[in-house]
Length: 247
Length: 241
Image 1 (cartoon, each protein chain N blue to C red):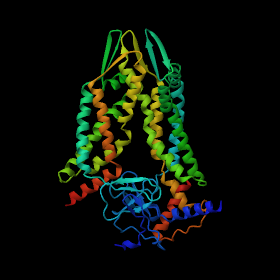
Image 2: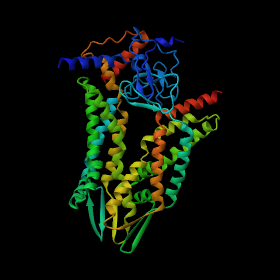
Image 3: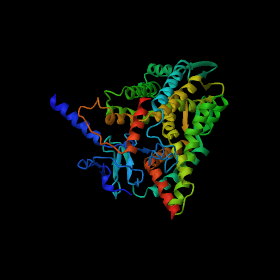
Image 4: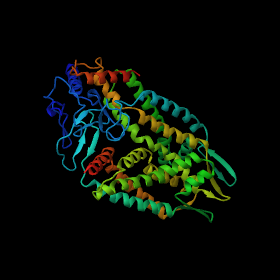
């Protein structure tokens, strides 16, 4: 146990010796990734307003995620499309589609649809909420885990749109007069909104906030790490950073 | 101009993480006057990374702290991207103008083109989804490719590119909303859903679009965010000369 504790403490000590751009008062532009001293108002390359971290990152992310959650309710209640077969209209919800394929024993498609339209959106919203919670709580952060989680949410972001595209193709293609026709349902719009909102939420969340904590939060560090004292301009930036995280 | 040796050096060489732990400076320097071109900040953890003077081709630079991939040094990225972008534009124009899918059931058939999917949705009163499909699948990819060509052709010919900043901003804004690969999967799922109830004939545009998606993924691997803005910096230098 003792060796393990020592290992972690050295790991943290090593981490804290790294210097982030923000500690030096450099803003890394979120658009063009170039460095500009934060004292200059606009990015040197692309002209975007300089911020050390995304402004109100957590608040904006939470607002977008909660809106997405609200839209997720109609997305599941209302039919995503309705099939008219020989004059008879059969509405189908997202979950209904999965169950239908399970009944037909086509498990593979059932799993694909379930993952894309139910599992991924819920997992994405949960992960973003968890990340926001952890950044606010500021202790017991599993930094590498959080970084991986964030990368996953960013990567899978647009893949939930598969279901909307399926509906779009089916609606256009299956228009056989008098026999079979497919019409879109309200849930398709709600679902598309959920996907767009969660994508925006993931973009608003500033992953750099979780790494700031290692350098700043003394409680979580087993070893006392001395970050070198900085000249005036830089220490101003540091307090700027601390204020920012308190939001 | 300040002394270079005073800056923290989290060096990266040939994809391996090298950090200079000995030079633990007692004070952090004020960077306001310093030339920042040899420094990058990790986009995930904001670590300041010092790049070596020369990077070999095929070097992959990763962050020493969080191992996030920063960029890869590629061999003639402009030529490759131009070739891919032109191919993709040709494929996309084929995909838009030829029949996409055809369905046959009980002797009645219905053939659609790629643009017809958003049009039908629009006629059904679902303008929002129609817009999403139109933008994410056809319009934005086309605009992205055009902007890329307009940005790169002057660089390729070694001429000055005045509007490179505008193109780069457009490209950067469009990229997250392009869903070419997602659409291909969507079409495949739709086909699986239909395959038991009706006969489906795959059109020319279908194959063209799949090829387009493959080429587009190839472009995306080359044109990373850093690569894009690196081109803008180069275009700026060309303007200055």
